[in-house]
Length: 201
Image (cartoon, rainbow, N blue to C red; front, side, top):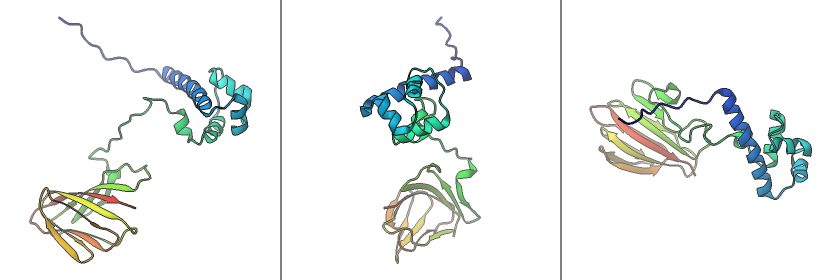
C-alpha cells in the first residue's frame, strides 16, 4: 500500500512573523537596488537613518509602523504593499452567496446582490438582479458615458433606455446607455434573474 499523506501542520504565529520579517528584509533591499539608490539616498528620501535601514535589511531590527510608513512613502507604495508577503493573503477574493454585506437591495419586488468586491475603487460593477413578477428596477441617469450590459439567466425581462425597449428571454444579452433614464421590468409570470454589469467611463 502507498504511504498515507498527512496534512502539513499550519505554521505557528512566531514562524509566520519570522517569515514576514525575512520577506521584508529582502524586499526592502530589492526595491532600493531596483531604484539604484544607496542606503544614504534612501535615508534622505524617507527620513530614516542609514544605520536603521541597514539593520532592517540585515534583519537586525524590528522597525515601527511609523518607520515602515516612511519607507513605503519613499517608494510610492502603501504600507500594505510594502509589507505584504507572497502567500500571506489569498490571490482569490471570494464573495459567499449568503454574505448579507453584498445584498445591495432586498424588497418584495427586487433583490440586488453585488458581485464585485466592496473594497475596490473600480469603474466596473457586477450585480445579480432578481425581479419578482411585475417587479421593476428603474434607475435615474448614471454618470455621463455609463453603459450597462446584462444577460438574462431566468425569466423574461424588458429593458428600456431613453425611450427604446426590447424584450429578452433566457440566454439573451443586451447593452444600452445608462446615462439616461433606464429600467428593467419582469414581464413574465415567474421570477427573473439577470446578471448586470455597469461600466463607468
